Amino acid sequence: MTQPQLSIQLYTVNDQLVADPDGTLARLAEMGLTQVEAYAFVDRAESLAEAFERHALHARTGHAHLLSDELRFGDRVIPVFAHDEIFAAAKTLGMEYVIDPMVGLDRWLDADQISATAARLNAAAETAAGHGLRVGYHNHAQEFAATIDGRSGYEFFVDQLRDDVVLELDVFWAATAKVDVTALLGRLGDRVKALHVKDGYVGVNPFTPDAAPFDKAELDQRSAGQGELPMLDYLAAAPGCEFAVIEFDHFAGDMFDGVQGSVDFFHANGIK
Image (cartoon, rainbow, N blue to C red; front, side):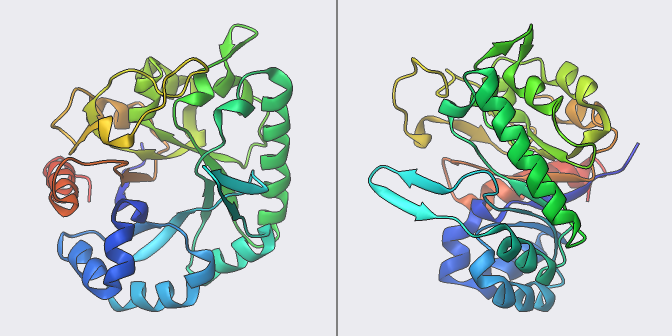
């Protein structure tokens, strides 16, 4: 069994990072973190690389949109970077895995759309290999909305991926989709190289075709060990996991307190 390294997805503290890059990274390093998962890194790779080096931090994983031509948030349209730009920036930061963070619900509702998404990730994997990198996918809950041939859309998707494509399973979102996360990890096997280890209390799944609009402030996400999810069981069920990545979509309190709570839990259980 691989002993995972503790990391943090920098989306969690991105507001603080934008406002005070060195202060934010210094605070994470003071908590004993040595790994970070880069976020929004393509157009700031050089500055992030310099800052990470100053604080003895490493980013072996990072999130970038590989599977969408554009991102829409209401009336805002956000362009995405070309794959070669993404992978060049990832190399600047010393990454090994570039992980797509999300594909919308509308692309998880039928077999043809899911197969098309898998094909796009496979094509990205081929390009990434030319840069000495691997790609992966990070789930929310929408990937489990459809059932295809008796399996969730997520597992139908995974079955079509190249062997070198990895998975980063977000255990909170998988649990929100009412999945038996431990059993799922057993089926996914060594393809799972990272877990997003957010704890909390799972409520209604907001990623279904008939779900009402939701505000992320409705999410009850908590530091590891302070919710209902068995984090250590999940890690034990993922023997190939290399990174246990702290992340919050929302935290009801000071974000650094939430991060510190998770760091303390994992350090106490030998994950550093």
